Image 1 (cartoon, rainbow, N blue to C red):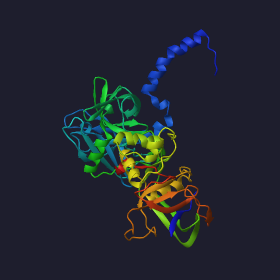
Image 2: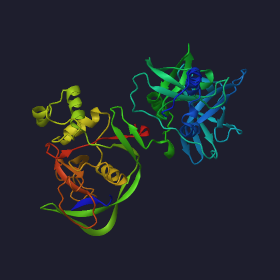
Image 3: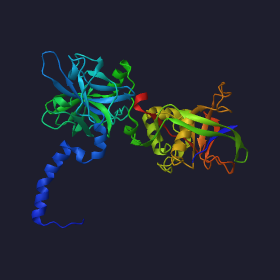
Length: 437
């Protein structure tokens, strides 16, 4: 038996007016840099709800103001990250949330990397958290190269609270991200944002340059403090472009019903009546919206020196770059996804992705490898009879299903040998969210 999912102006200006516009243009550009919230007010208003004002009172010192941001919200607590020097000397600084700016609350220190110029600190605010507070997502996958436009939010002394500013990434300076922007002390500890996700923690400013601790280093510190970051649902992008330029869509955790079907000769499948079964995903993930193309696979071949597929080697000139790569073995598919810093989807992930997107991500020309070893009964707990058999999934057309009995839509599970490629068989990759990396 095999399992199957049920889813499916032109304006003419006079010279005076043109002169005025030319005069105002630099002013407007400066305002856009200092106050980009006017350009993307709805998005930035949401991000501000994850940014907090931190006031520390060190012994014998004037109150010090810095920034922090929320990385996790539980029923009875919020976890906040900031720069260590913002709170050093005060184990119980006060935190002000954007949705409730008139009521600062006391925070407890969870962990701190004291004495380090780029050290981090974690705070915990207990008790009911104001409605509207959000946890920001960490981006551990985007590979920045320099020149990217960045956003940061903070509390500079001469500007209003929660001021939104932009800058340009310069690159890495030792272990820190360096960016060009008008940065002040009040920005320290705040999130450095790229496309609404945190890529770093602002830690220092020198000579009109800002410095930030990369999100990858933050992730290590969080693990040491036993804080698992969890972005608020509304803050996780529904779509994203990976470092390799491939579009991916978010597939959320949860369960979906599945069915048992019989697969017979001659391209026939039939629904098997029985109790409803479910497929459950524990975590969110991103799935590529297209199967891997000839062009992508050729880049992998050139970068790694792996032996190219015979089809690619013999017909490289005539193959269309954007068409799906075929005749890839399971092992080659696994190697490609690892090279791309991704992985093959499990059978359950593939099925939920197909259902959640109503089949729009499927390619009717090729069916796809999954990470699972084939079991005749999908829910069997025993050892597979043949470890070389891997589950393949696809649309009914791609699997050459011609006769369908029952409401079984377009997903059937079958198997293929991991060591062999075949015409009409391709694959796609998935990527885990930041919190799982």
